[in-house]
Image (cartoon, rainbow, N blue to C red):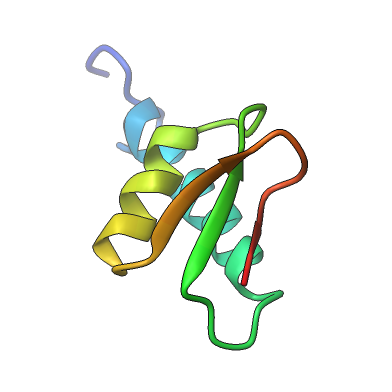
Length: 70
């Protein structure tokens, strides 16, 4: 195995990205037609979530509370 790979060939970075995408999708699932995503300062994998939101052309704002979309 190469450094950072799991026994299935995925790297730790790939697993982080998948985990972040799942979290991003779960935040968006709670909104009907989101245009803005509020990302908590305490959110794990914030940079990935901001990246996904930017790619989806959502407005990204930071919040001290829980992450949500509206």
